[in-house]
Length: 291
Image 1: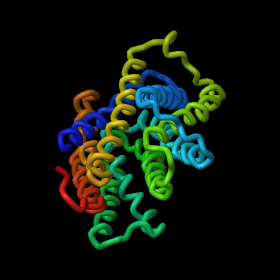
Image 2: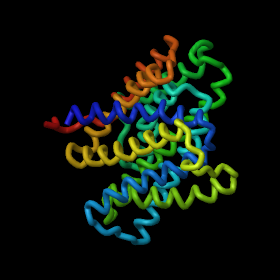
Image 3: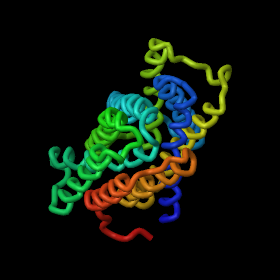
Image 4: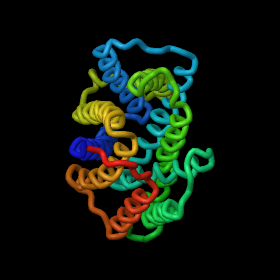
């Protein structure tokens, strides 16, 4: 199980620099959201066909899928593709670590979790980590990049809201793969008018570039890794599976150095240490060891 967890984090970490390469191909953000949703829907739909399990098309399930499509794909996809075009991929990997820290205060406010001294310290460490990215003069290659940090943080905020929404509606008759297929299909329908209305429509077959190949790899990898995450959470528990966040953050920075030749200042490495420390304190501890 531990080996699968590590491979999961390494693979997901690679999707950040791969997505940046795809953005550099010139495709619009709405086009990228649309085709990523199409690839995810096709991959998850194939899994459903293999399983031969019918979809529970109820009002509750469709409402759940609609919220997940907006908070998990369309809105964070827009902010991600806009901001990663201007920010280093490694910085985007660091920002992803903020998701549990944003989700915790919401869970506490909803009465679904409690705030301890250790978790409060974790929140403060996470805030300090983000501040180290934004404040020092040498942390970012170009100080104008700081203007894109608030937009980059919208994605983690959406994921945090989504996580709490999913936790509040965990009594659906649909399993995770069914729900995510419906969410991906709805994301296709939601993003189609956006991509057409914005004039960003592209046919990847007739306008093929190597950036398209990278994008397909990234989107397929993301869908496959999500399915793996669902399987791991079912087998080993959600708490154990959530520990992949540590690997994703670190691996994302390593992949950025390998694939994009990015370099980071000492301030960024200090921010990484603070964010990982905060993530460790904020994340719930498993009640028993996983074999």
